[in-house]
Image (tube, rainbow over all chains, first blue to last red; front, side, top):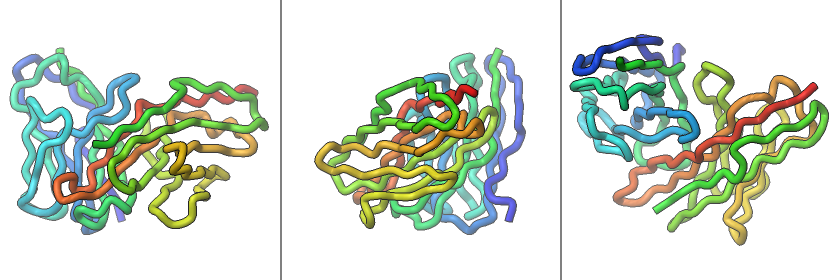
Length: 115
Length: 116
């Protein structure tokens, strides 16, 4: 199993550009989520999904869109990039849908810089 | 509502000495608690988890944590630090309700430095 994969690993954008961060998992996990990691602030939840066709907002959703058309894929779209979105983005998945008992599996991260 | 406080942003120990990383949590419901480790420029890896079974939880690489409900704490310990333990450590709490959907809340992280 490849686990959770993310592409690209690095990206530089100009203010106002849009892009999609890709995330895929091959473990048939129901729950998938996107986090951003900023220095000294831990990981903050952007959006999450408890199954195909179901998404919801997390703690910091503004400026980001998601969709979940398949169990495997959970792309994150930046609509109009801003310097405040410079961060490291992690995708994660876990088994069990709404269950809180299972651990999350994390991708390797995408380091995004917005100029 | 739920929250996590990691009481130390940086901990420095000498190789071979004990490690203590402190975590307090707040949760309106019975929580699940996790410790993750992140090595530089890497993703997060699970160290251990508590899910209402035994209160003393053993994890990988010699780490363990004790759930203390009366103190709302879940501190991470290791008897003897190794150079390879140098990393960022995150305490995480989650719980499930009809509206929470098992979302996780992360602490701000503790950077562990191990001196030779």
